[in-house]
Each structure stands twice: as structure tokens, then as C-alpha cells.
Image (tube, rainbow, N blue to C red; front, side, top):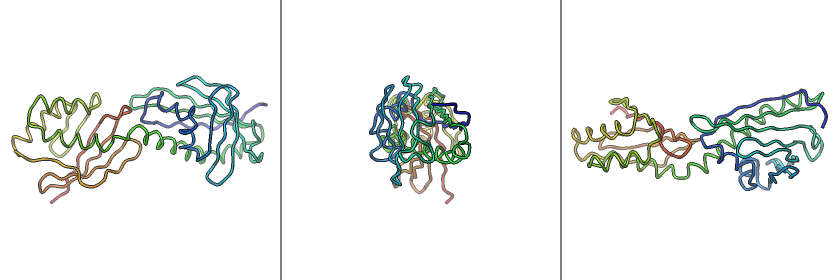
Length: 252
């Protein structure tokens, strides 16, 4: 491979641990989830990489470096030789832990004369990294419905210890909660608020209504409590626990 003077860089935050994200570069079934059916990768130095794009175009490459769960490097080109010949560009993906998951850094380096080709790939990588973010989220947050229902159920538990335990089991450290009557941090504070709500509105229960809507760790869930209706915006942490909730009641 000759000099690669042209380069594009992309960075995205994925709400999952690095070990989880890295599996989408080393396991062919997960690799195919964000590239397309039939895409494969042999994640070892000298291993082959194949991408089958939805439009039928194929990209080829060779794995150069693998350092789980931090770094993978591979060559990248098209089977037809256009616009990049096989082996003529290099992709480096690096993962680093972040407070809410993993920061993914991508660098794609191109040969002399390929500045226009580099520019054409900016939107392509913008799109592909959104696909991996969604694919990882679909794997990590498979229990999102159950977590949401446990959140609402916890508000109806009357025993202090049982309610404290219920919130602690689904709350990420430093969880926050906001609604028209609350600005809270920590599962203990939220549990105490739920207990107070039951004293003023005995027997009131919050229940989910309809299907949740989920995108990359952000969940929208409609709810009902007696005659009151509203929507919760729930942010999930890398481990699948709840990191924040904002509850918006609809005006009667």
C-alpha cells in the first residue's frame, strides 16, 4: 500500500460497553447487521473482509490489526475496482470508554488523487455509523419494555424497603427524574417521592399505554395514572439500566 494522504474522520457515541460494540467488528452475524446480509469478516491479521451493500455492490478488504476491544484496522476497496481498488484505502476504528457508553473513532485514509473519493465517503460513513449504533442498541436494549414496565410498577409499591429495592434494581448510578413536581437525583430520592405520592393519592397506579418507541437507548413510553395521561422520555445506560426519566403530563 502506497502513501495515503487523504483522510476523513468520524466520531460517534454508542450507548454500550466497548466489549459489546467490538463484537460488531469481529463476529460475522453482527457485522452483517450493520453492513447487509451476506457480509462477513475474519477478524484476525490476514483475515478477509467482505461487505455486500444493499444495492448489490461488494467491498473487499484484509484485516491488518486487531486489538480487542480497542482497535481494528482493515483495508477497503471495491470488487469492481471503482471508485477504490481492493487494498487501496485503509480504515482504522478505535473504541474508548465514555461515561454513557463507548466513543467510536473512525479514520478512513485514501491514496493520492482520491480527495474527491474521500469526500464521497463522508455521507456513507455518516450513514453506516448510524446503522451500527442502532444495531448495537437493538442487541443491548432487548429488555427495554420490561425495564419500562418495572419503572412504572415501582411507583405503586407501598412498602418502603420493597420500593427502594425495586428502584435500585433498575436505576443506573446517578439516575435523575423530572416532572412537574420533581427534580430528583438518585434512586432513594425517587423512591421517597413515589412514597409521598401514594400518601397524597392512595391507590393511584401508573401503567404503560401502547407500545414503546425506542432509538439508540432513548425510549418514549406513554402512561396513564387515573384520569391523567402523559409520556415519559427514558434514557437507558450502557448496561440497560435507566439513567434519566423526564415525565410529561398532558394538560387536561
